[in-house]
Length: 194
Ligand code: GLN
Image 1 (tube, rainbow, N blue to C red):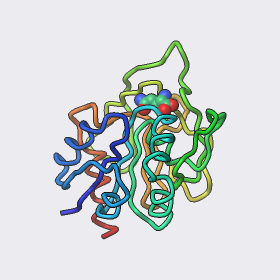
Image 2: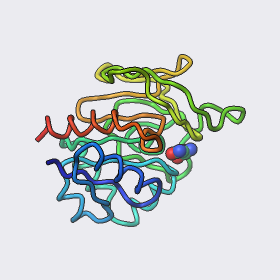
Image 3: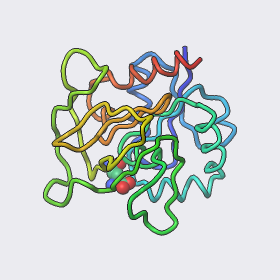
Image 4: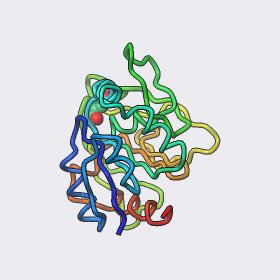
């Protein structure tokens, strides 16, 4: 059984721990470099990407995370987590850095004021049995992707789910629904990597 960490600096950690357990992984919170060293895969949750970036630096996790992701650690980021996995952010806040791992440029809070939070059915490549319920909360979208990035889903013409090798990211929050199909896809990616 794969052991999957959830980066537990800020954000909806608990919901991811529950979804991963439901998808047959052993799930644990990760706050320290020693805990990171023990996991086979990592989820970066939704929350606030500027805060996650600052706390990662404070907890001495920025470099260890960058190194492990670059070395092929399977990772899955939702919303703020998607931002943290982007190689580049359009208009980052000062001091805001990312872990990287996906060759893409993201736009924060992209859907705009009229549409800050909404739900929509999203068809995701590789996910069978119909669309997933996409919960978008001040969500980013992916502005552009490099040649090695697979676009898995779009919403109204904007890219909202991507995969590059062992890195997966969604603008929306499957952990807030009872639907664990995307977590199950990630658990399969972790198994395949092991
Ligand atoms: N708007 C947040 C950010 O920029 C992301 C929101 C979320 O994770 N639901 O980090």
